[in-house]
Each structure stands twice: as structure tokens, then as C-alpha cells.
Image (tube, helix red, strand yellow):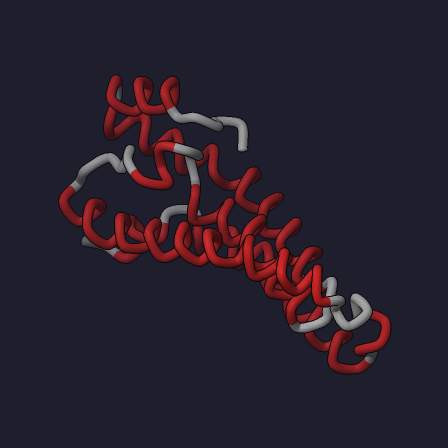
Length: 151
């Protein structure tokens, strides 16, 4: 199994996001007060943890499904993939990075999450074309039945 098949659009999304991450981290280190979210307050910490828990579960679950099913050439349609087309990208972008950033007192996680999500929206259609070609009607059926195909 080629690594590129396992990664899908992840490398392109990573390259798209990397400059924002590096520049953001450097700026955050140089000007931490600018990036601070004010502590965060206890309520925001609690909300962050509550959202991070399913975020990490979705992330890990998605990775495990990829590692198990992609080498077998199986279309993944269960677990978090039944909810959204790209739960790995979406979960990390919306459920992990922003809330992890808040926990470490930086809104940089929100910015990087948004950039990652935009990158996934730019590069995922290419991956979807490949999946449609490989899986045909199974892909079409999956796409019609996924709960939040627009996310």
C-alpha cells in the first residue's frame, strides 16, 4: 500500500496549512499577549475539554479506520465517516485545534483550524474524484447517505 493512498489529500492540506502554522507559532512566541484569550476562564476551559474529548475520539477513530480499511481497498462508510465525508480533516480543524489553542491560552488554534478547514475544502474534491472513480456506485451511495455531506 502506497503511503500516498493512506494520506489522501492530507499532504496538500498540510502544505497549505504549514506556513500559517509556522508564522503563527513564531508570532505567538514573540507576542504571547496578542494571542492570549484571557486566561482562559474556567467555563471556557470546561467547554474546551468537553469539545476536545469527542474531537480526539473522532480523530483517532478516523485514523484507525484509515489504517485498517484503506490497505484492504475498502470504502470507509461507518463510524465518524457516517457523519461527515472527511472526519479526520473536519475533526482536527473544528474540534481539536481551536479548543486546544484556547486551553493553552491562544486564539491561534482557531486561526489554524480555519485555515486547515479551508485547505480541506480546497483539496478534498480531488480526493473525492479518485474515490468516485475507484468505488463507483458505492461512493455515490455513501455520499448521498452521509449525515452532514456539506461539512
